[in-house]
Image (cartoon, rainbow, N blue to C red):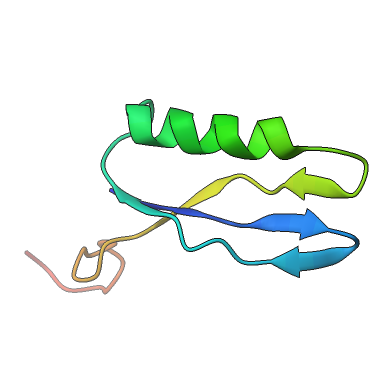
Amino acid sequence: MLITCKGVQKNNRHEKCPFLHDGDWGDSQLVDHQNYHRSQETQNYSWLGFETSQPIGKFSGRDGKNS
């Protein structure tokens, strides 16, 4: 699963974060990245969390075709 960081809201502006992780929830890299952003939080700095992307080529099953 591809997990990306949504970035931060800093001084009322969105700033992107280049963090990208190919793994699972709970991996130590995700925990460390989350802890980094949480340690930076102040009144003018807010972490926006993680999001996942659906893998390319994975079918939803809603194309109407018979298998």
